[in-house]
Amino acid sequence: MTDTVKDQAVAPDLTKAVYTTDNELVCVDPAGEVLWRHALGAVQEEVLSARAGCAFSLDGTTVWLFRPDAMGRWNDSQDTWHVLDAATGEVLASAELGTVGHGGEHYLHPGGTDVLVGVGEGQDGSLVFRGRFDGSALEVAPYPWKDRVFVAFAVDGRQFMSVDHGREDVAFHTYPDGDVVHRITVADLEYDEDVSFEWTGGYLDADTAFVVAAGEKDDEEWARHHLIDVRTGAERGTFDPRTDDPYGVIATGGGVWLTFDDGVFRHHLP
Image (cartoon, rainbow, N blue to C red; front, side, top):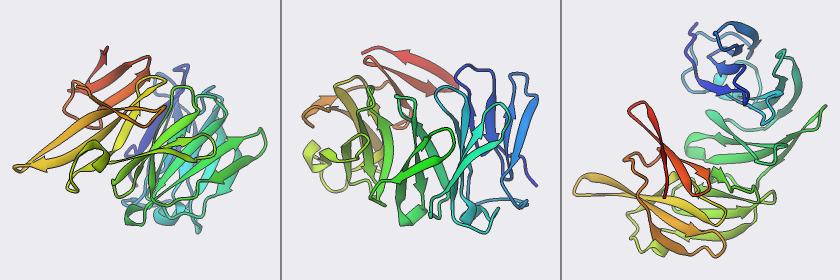
């Protein structure tokens, strides 16, 4: 049995952290002492095709756990989603998702009540679910697509963006409904069909998002960050993120962003 960390998250107040392995969700204090453990199910020697995902709620009182049961084979079921008490590890609520995912990424809505999970099913696509814990039950609402990858929430939480699973377009949606208000294709950015979008992007401020177009020229891969006016869907030029990693830009609002290169976070201004 391996103890390799598969996913991890830190509480907002930095008093504890959680991580998943092939068989457990583990909570530790700042010194690394185990506070509690939660078994995922039947013990597996090694899980190669699945990764359990975890996240703290914005207020730090609960831990959200996505369990890819079908691929992980911990339990004889399809994937499940759970809310645990962050202090004790007690399971407070659970829901079946009906997916067969390799993993699930959590995204916290700025409002503090909702959590989204994006479930990747490999070549079969990607699904997104909205969850809300009301104190006793986990309410789950699926978005009506299997071919979009969630990317980021807007600063005010009233909108979010997604990228087509085949990387053909970027869409901007209302929240919570998910209605598409703008859709950007590579042709809109004056690229040919050999160019595609990366599964990344973000909101630099309330009115401006960035998307990442990528391609290859002379056997060299390239990526370019384009600015999008989220009010109109119009392209507003490009910007230099000051990193060569197309996935290495973390928008923090207010027009600033972070990059992570060579083990160092850097804070950037426009």
